[in-house]
Length: 412
Image 1: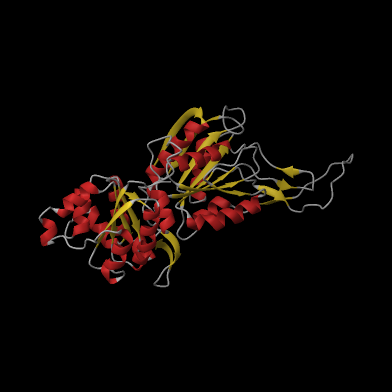
Image 2 (image 1 turned 30 degrees about the vertical axis):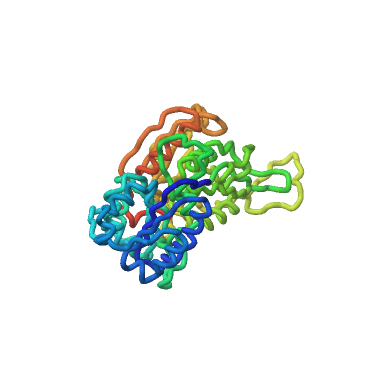
């Protein structure tokens, strides 16, 4: 990642997270970016303009009606100068003002005058972030082309724990200028959105030699992870045992059993905005695993199975849950079974495909999907999984950004 010769206009608003902007400026300058800072009046109560001026190497702007600056229409000059406008931290107040086109200070006026890409790194109390008014403003700004980086989940200055913390300066830098070595496969932009994906089969041991598994190759989940990364998302992939190479620039977590996948996915899910359960997790596992190899006999042998824990339903039951997408592989009654699973597990979306006698699906390079959500459905025709993945992600993102806030957080 290199920001050489990039002009970054950094807006700072009133939030305790303003202290992080000092480190953010340092990281941007470390990448040889030129940074100019604009502060709202309330931001100066949390960190001094002198601090940010010293770190950025430029005088900090705080006034819209500055007599000297207005001689050269400073807000227009700054807007033209910027290659990117980054507001970090972005308070609920500035998000509301920008969404409604208000321009009563220098920063909000710059937003209207800027023609460059705009990035917001929200920071506020978790209850404020989930308020319907804030989420409506976020959705409106997304339709204007604004990119959101975060917020993250964690302990907040007020003592609450949840979504609302400003993303770490390192993540903001990485999201602002993702690695350009990997070209994007689609125009889809998932910058600042963290995506958790599970892929592949699980193996449920019977004895040290034998296990119960299925035909899943993991190709669909791996294709989704790669496509999400290429679209700018921060991606974590929880993978069962597959014959596939690790993906670069993606956090890989390897598991073998359904119990291990349950633990890893539930540990990761609270830190992600979207969870896509593409793994073919075993529904049952042996009630008891023997420590020695079972010998073949001339008589019948009974194997007692017990149900595994439901990963999808458990993720969807988190408070608040990520936007949860399930998969359903069926040999018959595809639509009925998929819609039942969508409702019973309280998922946001489900992608269903035929297996068995139908073409595509398990262990194939191609697949077709029937995708269902509570307000609609769409068919994605047979195609290579590497092409199907970005098409599915685009559909997920469309529904994700229009889902009511109480159903799923927009970002993490």
